[in-house]
Image (cartoon, rainbow, N blue to C red):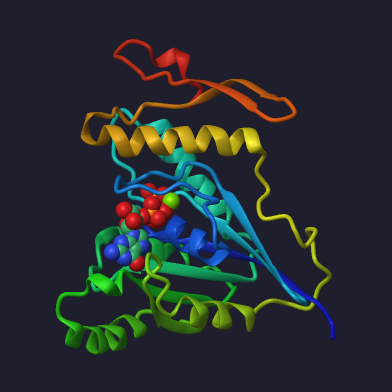
Length: 247
Ligand SMILES: Nc1nc2c(ncn2[C@@H]2O[C@H](COP(=O)(O)OP(=O)(O)OP(=O)(O)O)[C@@H](O)[C@H]2O)c(=O)[nH]1
Ligand SMILES: [Mg+2]
C-alpha cells in the first residue's frame, strides 16, 4: 500500500480548544493549554504516524481581532503565525466553541475564504452543551456559511468523536512518502518544551494575577546520565521595560 502524508492546520479564535485537541489526537501533551485565551504563541507540530498514514498537525495561536492595546506587537506576531500555517496545508480543522459564534469566529471564517484546502468544522466542547436540542439546528445554520468538507461535533477534552474527526482528516492526506521518522512526535526541541511547560504552570497557577507580558527563557538545560538540570528565567514586563522584550 502506498503511503500518505500531509499537513493539517488547527485554527480558531483563542480558547476554543485547539491545543487540547492536538494533545488528545497525539495522546500526550505536545502543546500547552490553559483557561486563559492566547496561551499558544508559536506554531507547534504534532506528528502522528499510523501504519502508512502520517498526519502532521500544526497547532496555531488563536486568531483574534487586533485591538489597539499595548500588546500590539505580539498580537500581530500571533495572527501572522496562524495565517502562515494556512499556506500549503492539505486540510484545515476550524474549531468553534459549541454554538457560541462570535465576531472573532466570523473573522477566522473570512480568513479561510481564500484557502483552497478542504476545511473541516469541529464543533468543540459538546460535553458542556446546555441544551442538546440546539445542536442540530445550529449545525445546519453554520453549515450554510461555507462549503465545509465535514462538520463534526467533538469534545477534545473527553475524546468524544475525535476518532471520527481524524477519519475525516485522513481522507484529505495526499499520497506521499512520510516526512518524519515514525517515532518523532513534534518539531520542537526538549528545551522549547521545557520552557513551554514552565509557562503553562505559571499561567495556570497565577490565573488572573498574571501579566500577559510574561515569557520564559531557559538559562540552563544540562542533561547528565540520570538527571536533566533545567533553570528558567521568567521575565515579566513592567511599565517602561518594553525594550527588554523582542516581542
Ligand atoms: N469542557 C471542555 N473544555 C474544553 C474542551 N476542549 C478544551 N477545553 C478547555 O478550554 C480551555 C482552552 O483550551 P486550549 O486548548 O488551551 O485552547 P486554544 O484554542 O489552544 O487556546 P489558545 O492557544 O489561547 O488560542 C482549557 O481550559 C481547556 O481545558 C472540551 O472539549 N470540553
Ligand atoms: Mg492553544
